[in-house]
Image 1 (cartoon, one colour):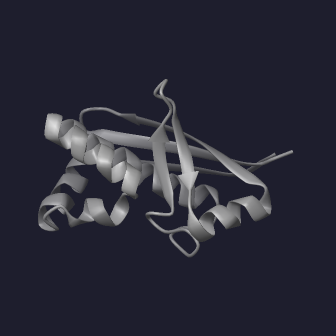
Image 2 (image 1 turned 90 degrees about the horizontal axis):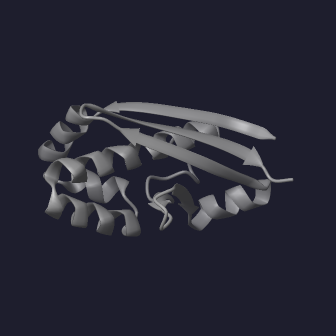
Length: 131
């Protein structure tokens, strides 16, 4: 059963300006530990791909927060959900702390899809109740 759907669309340039203004601190605020390590590696290889990675993760968190109906209110925090990738490349959501408990208590799970183009990124999350 579908519990909620969230969607987010972001101009990469908007995040790039915020990244520069905050001297990169925005990435540390938004990304979880595992995401941050991937971001640094991608940014080191190609700055544009690193920024696209940061943007897709931001969009996924925004979409997820909408899908669970909380927005950015506890137990939803920037770092309590991470969008990681299976070895196949498929993205998945990993919850931690109080958010993991919140999802488990309700029997909810979520699927995420992300995409990026030269100027924009998009994320869609579908939250379902486990049978």
